[in-house]
Image (cartoon, rainbow, N blue to C red; front, side, top):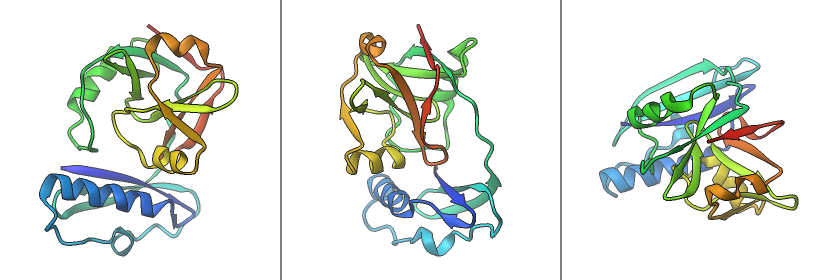
Length: 192
């Protein structure tokens, strides 16, 4: 099973076309191109209240569940580098391998996964680094997040390989996902 997390802000679905594209791609790759076309905009019924809500859609070839809950952000300032050969090209509900890596964080708030010497993602977000001129994001993330995709397409983020030994050359980093958008982390720390 897979899931899609979509931000609902003041009753409005955010960036639906990017979620629809990933949903369609995952279903086609995993269940075949003959899956019936399902339009997320027709099945999402956002709470008509002010505030930010997380819409979670669980699916395989069909939609299995849709839930809504108020969004409570998690503070992340300190990342611990964790080496792994993990693959996570689709947003699976089974996150056992990611959760196992997360348990290695020690006193950090989250992990920064390094695969084959290259920076990928944290356990909950894509990452970007500021070099004084541009925001750079890993060329090969664990998951091609919808916010990352949107910011790459508009030219705000430049994808390129980022080696773990380059981290000290960047001024700061930002986390990005559907719920937090693009969030530069002030005084962020990355440890080995």
